[in-house]
Image (cartoon, rainbow, N blue to C red; front, side, top):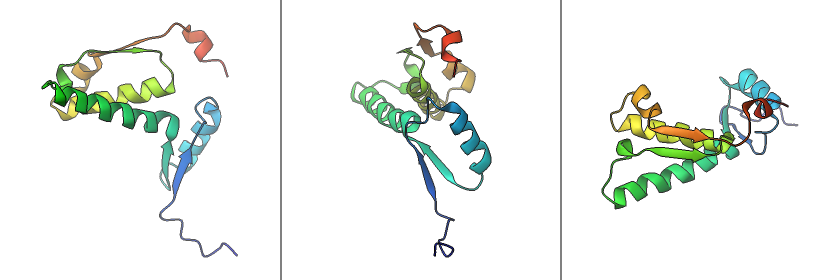
Length: 117
């Protein structure tokens, strides 16, 4: 019945899988080359926050690459936002190393607790 479905234009929405990282790793490694994946927790939040940040900087006449950013929390959303902001800084001419030096992440949760399943 479904054998005629064209899967060349499939977008996989990964909503709420950040905490189930084993599933996310399996899906991404197995299907990364075949399908587009969108993780709402990471990319959705990052897109909205980065858009607000970039336009806020424009409104005050400041370049994104001149910013210093401190992220309070180092969860999946914060990591996504940091990644998108880094790309925006690189787009404005910074090297990856220079962009990384402008973004700081602070977390109250010890790293050992973050790595537990």
